[in-house]
Amino acid sequence: MIQSLKDLEEKIINKKAKIAIIGLGYVGLPVACMFAKAGFHVIGIDLKKERVNQINAGVCPIEGFEPNLPELLTEVVGQKSLITSTDYSHLADADIVLIDVETPTDHDNMPQYVALRSACTSLGKVMKDNVLIIIESTIAPGTVKQVVRPLLESEKQQRGLGNYHLGVCPERVMPGKLLVNLESMSRVCGGETEEVSKAMILLYRNIVSADLDSADIITAEITKTAENTYRDVNIAFANELALICQSIGADFLKVRELVNKSPGRNVLMAGAGVGGHCIPKDPWLLAYGAKGRVDLNLIPTARLVNDSMPLHIAKMTEKALADLKVPLSQAKIAILGYAYLEESDDTRNSPSETLIRYLQSKCAELVVHDPYVPIYQDDLSIVINGCDAIIIMVGHRVYADLNLAQIYELLRTPILIDGRRVINPEKAKNANFWYYGIGFGKNL
Image (cartoon, rainbow, N blue to C red; front, top):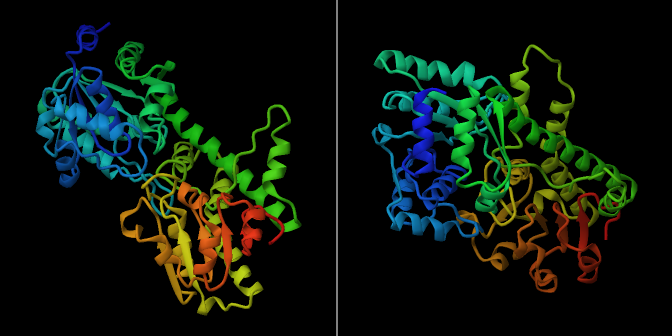
């Protein structure tokens, strides 16, 4: 083994390794907090000065229901084991650098590595010899070879640096479960050599109680994009099955329940759309890695199905209004939920955004409510007052627990469009609502 990695392993074991995290969002911040809690000195880098100031003040910038993260952040900041900055010069003595920046795709479904390129270039200008650099961001297969290494090599040559080590350990977290996911979900430690993978496993064992599997870099890159693509394809099947049930008079929830009694079957939940930073773009990252090598059919089709679900909700709303002789052009419609996930403030790739774009020019008035998104946190009763239809786009608990009798009194027309199936249809009927649910084949 290269001597530098032996030295690094000793530093990890003794908690003397200095760890840096680039990007303090939904992944980087909880990772930084957990390594700080484990006894390491951690420096976090983020270009958003307001976020850095919040963190250094012990205030969690991530809103929504995020169990134990605000308390942990306050604790490790108070202990000075986590310090954050916008200045990359603080990384000059870092032994390990984790990169946790966004890796979106553009309108043509091509990877946009602006943040990743910037992070690699800025790191390359200050990194020391023999630093271990780990990409936790989700990237297309081949990105380390084609993007990350060339940028680091360019800076290395200009500065006359010695060696450095590269690895990929894709994050596996979901808003609302950040800390528990980090601790309890397995990770793939893809290193450029077996020795690097071994050092990575030693590092992550400080915060992960689940399996830590050794792999090469390309395998790690593929694994993360493949697992999210697998989920996207399965959601697309659920959504298409729901459309079939709705069209021919069956209830998707009952069909799903019965299908899943068969061994080896696990139909996922259908819904009003797929959002977040990962699932809408990771299938395209996987596809990009095979561009020019494989003709793909299933992955693009699944993306098309899932992207179309907010528009299906719009058509359901139009039909419901027409059933009750309410012209869409004269209707006031309320959208309940703007985040992409229940009990979260994360609005990235929000299906509600797609729905809003479609409806806002077609109805008389469009209003939005979300208890976790600051610009939509007005009193719900005020928001929905006088509406002709309410559309549940996110399964926040506050919507699942709606007092339908009280809501009924506030509406001009009692239409309920349930895009997440959080309301019992019979309960809605008993409250005198016209109920239209995703995958529900009988309007009540």
